[in-house]
Image 1 (cartoon, rainbow, N blue to C red):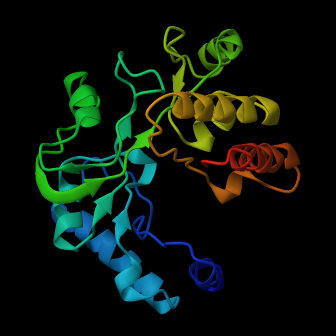
Image 2 (image 1 turned 45 degrees about the horizontal axis):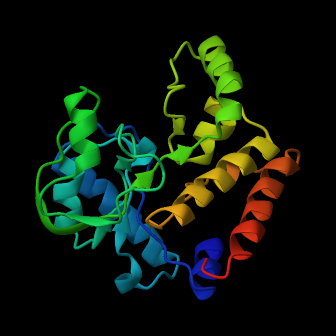
Length: 233
C-alpha cells in the first residue's frame, strides 16, 4: 500500500490489473468483473483515490471478449491489453495512436484471424491504449533467432524484427542483455520520431530488475536519459 500511495503522490496513475493475475483467456464476464472489483477494493484500501482508477490491463496480455464488457461495466475509460504493430505494413514509423473500440480493434482482428485470440467485439466509448511491439535493430536479429529457437523452440520473425513491447519478452524470452535492451528501445524511439510519433509505451515489471542484475536498470535509465535529450520528448 505504501508504494502505491507514494506513486500516486508523485503523480503516477494507478491502474487495475486484476487481483490475482490469473490466466483469463477463458474467463466469463462475471469472473473478470470479480477480479476487477477485488483489485479495486485493494487499491482503495491502499489509499488510492476512487476516481483515479481509470484503466485496465489483462494479465499476460491474455483476453477474450469478456474483459472488455466487464471493463465498460466498471466504468473504465480505457483498456491496455491489445498488442499492435504486428501488421506487415507497420514498421515502427506508422503505428496506430490510441483509438476507441467503437469499431473493434485492428490488432485484435489480425491475431483473431490467425487463430491466436478471440474477437473482442465492439465496445463504444471504451478507449484502447495499445501495447505496441518493440522494433529490433537488424544487427540483433541473428542472435535472437538462435536464442529463441534453442531455448523455446519458437520461431521469431527475422523479416520484421518485432518483439512484444514488454521487458520480459526482451530480457527473458529473447535473452537480451542490458546494452541490447537499450539498443532496442533506442531504435524503437528513433523510428517513432522519424514517423508519426505515436506514443511509446514500455511495459516493465519490477521483479526483473533485482540488485544482482544492475545492467537492466542501467539500460532503462540510459534510455530515459537519451529520450529526454530530445527537446520534443
